[in-house]
Length: 107
Image (cartoon, one colour):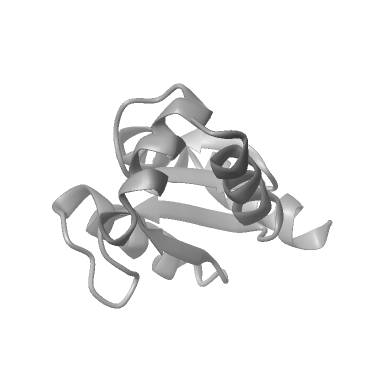
């Protein structure tokens, strides 16, 4: 990953409280896992930003290196990598995700 790519990703991650790097957009997810993440965040009713990795091959590879996580979607809350679809489902079901987003939005 180039220093420019890393800086770009850091700006996206740190410039938004809740960020999802996904296939497609929140209005039109392009895979089932991305759709699941969008649905979870929509149920919580929180504001979040999405970035379509299909539209930007450099971002697609860079985000995997940045997080050291091989799959998409990737969710960041308050600048911290939370995980992908499976982790978000677990956090949602346990109630921890609601707490994470409340803390992020209050800060």
